[in-house]
Length: 509
Ligand code: BLA
Image (cartoon, rainbow, N blue to C red; front, side, top):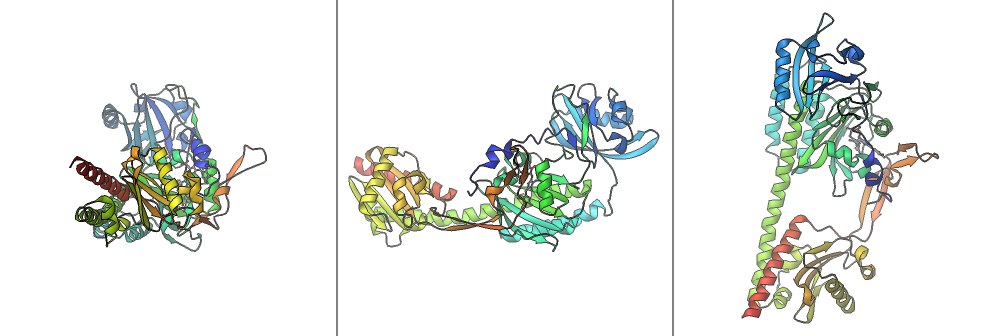
């Protein structure tokens, strides 16, 4: 990682973005006490959306707005217990005006939140027509087995549906940096294709929210932020948790970030793989852009389908890899049986199955008091020291690093041979290990702006800003090999089991 400071963990990740105490202006918020359904709090724009001042609504029962039938439906939803984002459409009578309302209900332990938007905004296309179009897109998507094609087709479809100026598939890595792997933009936006952005750009608490909420919509960064009244929720006696509210207002740092990207509206849609946030589909528009309820539901559905497709493609790739690895594992065991010994089996294996299995350039094994090696390995003395180090560490489990010199100083001397190390313990107490080596691979990271300047603090040390340049900033990472994959670590575990049982069988014979 290039960031000298971990802004994600140390700063950005701690901003209380769930307690903004204000909302965006494309709807209003009412908070009810759960058992009585009395209005106890709300946003200061209820007069604009539902034509009644929040100060007049406080203390009233929600039936002041809803018909008896809608009240019944609401009560039924509330009785179902703790749930978020339940769509609830109804008409309400306010001061003699009939209003069509789209509500999202959140039923918490003690309060019920109603996010209210006016209905029939901007719905020029019928839901069922769009539904049919998307369905045919999904059936095409289902036949595609290439990850990058799936990503491209997905962003193209979302762009076609909503008309965003720019849309990108943004994929997270193990350290939560994100790389743009597919992009469609107009000339008003800069290209970030292939660029990596530091974890702090979408900090951890913001990422966590996508595990519960499928998207984040910001129709206009120049919105009027309406405060909640009263500020302190009388039931929870604290600031209201707005984590699950679409309307939740946005932290200043992100609004500035959007401005720096020349973006007025944004919508990010999650991609989940195995219950983890794999990526975001980041949609940008240079002017304001409201996405109506129907289209948002379509995007929610697409988010699921795209996540499902991407998961399947990744699983299929892993299964292919597993099949190849099983063959290589079988080659190793066969050679060991044929040559009647672990060390000779590995050394005499003409197909070099071990090196192929772990994509390594050399290996060494210490067994029965003797050290054997093959391929590109450190010099004899260095190798002996490395085995002493491993014995000292008493690795009982598989150990793997792709940055050896960070954990073992002596490896500074031979990065081109062993920047990556895999240790398979056979009898760790006796210092018996099989080690595989990987050379250094210089890696270039194209950062979207210098990640060390992800935040700039003003002289007062309190006021801060996100970086204002996303110009390509190249970093060359030294001292690392290709990382060991999950599949390879599993294969190492399988090989360890074989080697230890083979050895035990020999001893017993
Ligand atoms: C939120 N940052 C976000 C979001 C995205 C990004 C997608 C989600 C909200 C949205 O959809 O707009 C980042 N967007 C990107 C990136 C690309 C993109 C990387 O299109 C690349 C193509 N941001 C900073 C710093 C901080 C920070 C320094 O740059 C912290 C101090 C914080 N980003 C930040 C916060 C949020 C955010 C707090 C959540 C905003 C909110 O939901 O209120």
